[in-house]
Image 1: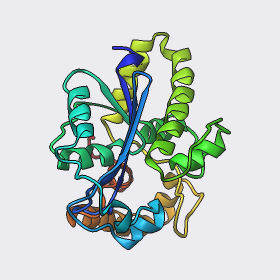
Image 2: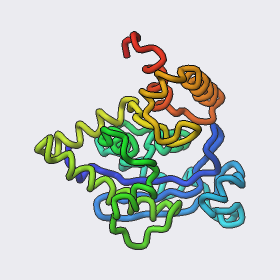
Image 3: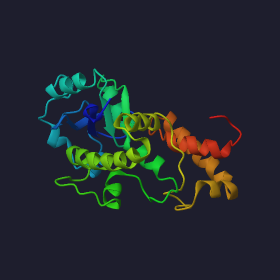
Image 4: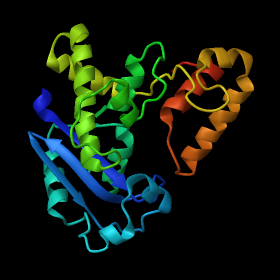
Length: 247
């Protein structure tokens, strides 16, 4: 296992709910960049358009992803031991699964960012925020464009890779550790939203456990309704609400 196995990938979709489908895909693998728009089987939601700026008119004359050359390429890439690298990789892997592409190996730079921020100093962990927080030099990378996000993703990954290389020593060990981090929930240190924004979760647990219980129920309901599986927050809240529980 080495960095030649890494597939940097990003999807743009019709929405973030259970019915969300692929409308743009970009990836970088073995020095090659690929990007394309596709006509999804469901309409693009207005909320999604406001973020990606991809409209139904823009994809009306595009081919479906199913049966496309790009789908064949992506299927072929992930038949072996190659590793999907994505920011919030669970989402992208889920979108690919809806297209019948199974991903075995995953590195999630969102989880890596949260894990390495031991003291919870970074206010936000979204890709573009981290781009400017770390002053990453990225050319031709428009936000919420799949290929632009892939280029930022590559720079962010490399920053974290070099940081972890100091501790783990070899390329293979770093990649293995990254996959292990990506396979489990991450304990969130601070609130980056709501009335306790900027405060440590551990401190809020002491003074307002009722808020944590309410938020936990909201997150679980959202997951059960297919809206969002925020596993990191669910894990974090459960841990503080049930300190004697074995995880």
